[in-house]
Image 1: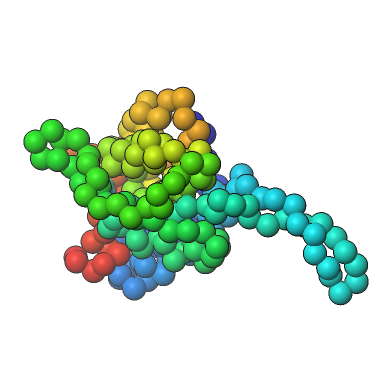
Image 2: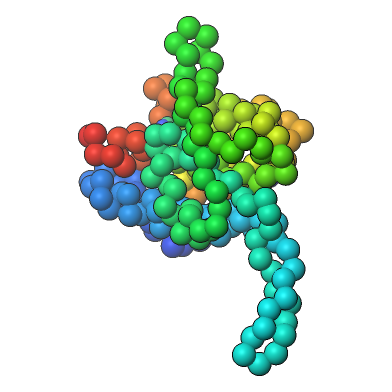
Length: 210
Ligand code: URA
């Protein structure tokens, strides 16, 4: 597994405003989109392209275009939805699928409660959107699910991650082609499962339920 932590002053500046508890939902949403667009630039570094010949006004030349099958972007409900617009702005030809993950209160294992994905994922490059990599339970399950359905490689984009979550994903996806692109690798998880210093509950802050 590859882990890429963004190291750019613009990203750190925007994350600082995002973390601030006084930042209201509309600003939080806007900043989330901007951050995802910046992280998507890094996350798509290995996106598959094919050579294509075009005519400029001056001559014929060979460039590239994103190859088939199109990349698949998968926001994890609910907070991942706040990242979708920022991603599709950069990769407008990507296909979008949805995954809803919830923890089964009996087994404590994350299970899929909603799924809207293309039938055939073979050969697909998948980009999973999940703002907070905390314990890694739901993200790990989502990544595993995509591989089970035939995905070729999976890149997860997270605004913040805890080291505990990164370690859990690493263990869970061993042997698969996985990349994590993180806005920041924070210090730790607290006893309530929140990332420290973190930004609180991303879903609540995106959708104004606090
Ligand atoms: N999910 C969140 O929204 N915030 C955290 O800090 C951890 C998980």
